[in-house]
Length: 566
Image (cartoon, rainbow, N blue to C red; front, side, top):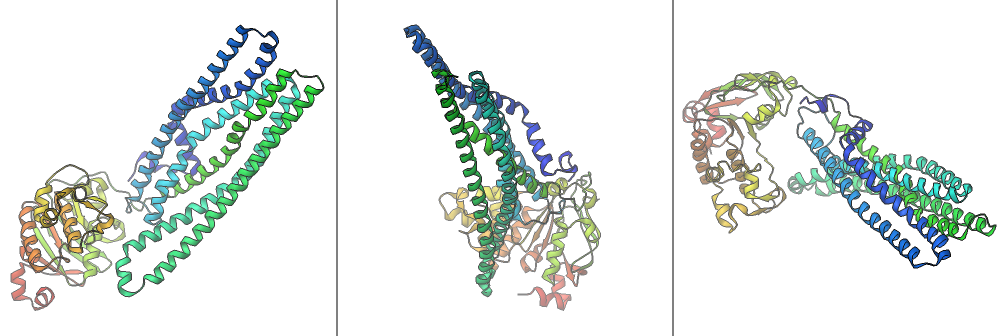
């Protein structure tokens, strides 16, 4: 889908600039407050030095009271400025991370519009960890500036005592940052590789969970677990490498900061011994040497976080800058609900052609299951319109000319393996919370026994992927969700393969009754659903070979009778 944000290229640096530009106000406020915090922190040893310099000489209660009051103001400023400064920055950070998560998820949910060579597990990692680390840049910049304020205040104060002390702080700070800037590049590259390997491990886990049952069925679970173990081990090794690099970085930063603090303290002691600075200035210098450790530590860590944020932004750009496979049009379907497939050739489909008129209930009996799956994929727009021959029209308009949103609103294709989400029966049936037609959908799908079985009713908790439901219950829950959506055109792919014959018969009647007046297409071999349909189309070798009612086909078509009779 074309939007102003996805049309233009978004490399990592551009993503970071966008994040910074959108949060200028919060960053300015946070910078002012955190700068005030650092200035007040640095002012504390300066105030102590002045107290020693003047109050102890005067030895008056008035001077002592003013000194205590000044320290109280400084401490209050430190406390309040930190609290409110971090509140502003963390709120902006969390909000920005949410924006990028939504943007990445939106791209990941449109596989037709985006050609991304990433699995769902990898996109999940990008939408969570990488989005969070990219948004950290909003905190990094104000903290970097505020740390610079502390170093500058300390350098000025020490320069007033003795120019050599101020120059020592400035030169030492520049040297420390130069060393750490080189090291931070290694951290950025290592972190980017770690995120990629973790994402691949996450994708492998997602694949294993989806295919666990069939893997157990043919004994392939041990090989699959071995494959995951190798991917996971690679991720672990890279994580250890990143941890080692981070440890070296942190140790080097701490050591260099300690050396600078020690150098300032020793130089101040030597100058006091020589009589070039006073005792009060010595107290101030030693105090600043200790207090400056915190802003120096924060200042020296910022390049590392900048490189991590940039590495994460580059990974987000893999999704956000992916070239569209196709460009959906701006049109919307005409009301009514007609569905037309005209000469479609894709996979096993060899020129399939049929029309479902508005309000009609049509069933397709596919002799080859793969053909039904290919047709469902085309109708669900999981295959780009330019990737197959022929045309699909919804509401009289070609699907290629329609926006993805309008297709999703107008046409719902419910797959045979519909996902069940962690939550409740209610949230699975009505994810958007509109409350439309839930009761009718539950009755039509024969899910009433599941609801009645638990005292929580529709609020009965469901585990991820419906782990606490049977196969038939999961299938009926998926069908209830499709019926509750009340789409103008509904396509059901094998909705009753996991239920018994009696339940299947009841579902077929209920679906036909509930969908009366709405366009419905069912891809199935179920005699009950075929009998409930207004007419049946036979899909054989990729083309429609016969059309009639189920009962007429049973009498007049021997191949059809062998294929669907049970």
